Amino acid sequence: MPAPLLQISYSLGTIENAVRQFWQVATGYNTLAFSGQMGAGKTTFIHALCDYLGVADAISSPTFALINEYHFDENGKDRMIYHMDWYRLRDAEEAVNAGMEDCITQKNNLSLIEWPEKAEELLRSPYLWISIEATTDTDRTMMVWAK
Ligand SMILES: Nc1ncnc2c1ncn2[C@@H]1O[C@H](COP(=O)(O)OP(=O)(O)OP(=O)(O)O)[C@@H](O)[C@H]1O
Ligand SMILES: [Mg+2]
Image (tube, rainbow, N blue to C red; front, side, top):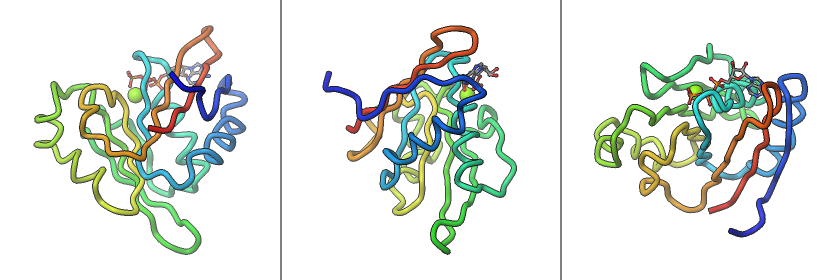
């Protein structure tokens, strides 16, 4: 595997700084795929990212809705975020039927996907593959690759 674009470790206390470093790498990508075990911290990091971007909507876990929609202001323009959780999908066909492909192929929005391995073939280059691993109860290591 090629070297990651970014490798950082963070706790809840330093997550804001991790988000800032992450966004320097992630700006310009429309699809961000967050991989990691249950409880690794995918939703937590996405919330911190949305806070950093100034999302005004209430941010919640898309576990039940599968897709949550938020908005933020990017240089005076409204930009939409689709926060998706693919955990309960069986395969790419189910993901397409649930509208996931429509979200990621729409131009200019930002798609944030938890459990992307459930329908990895739907992802279209260029995108970022982000792995989050719990190294201790409080520390997480994130690695970011361009695909
Ligand atoms: N450095 C850290 N970063 C993120 N979460 C942390 C960290 N340290 C502790 N935690 C805790 O770990 C848990 C992460 O849960 P979270 O819902 O973000 O995981 P997830 O990867 O989205 O899981 P799921 O696959 O079930 O959606 C939270 O309870 C959070 O408080
Ligand atoms: Mg989650």
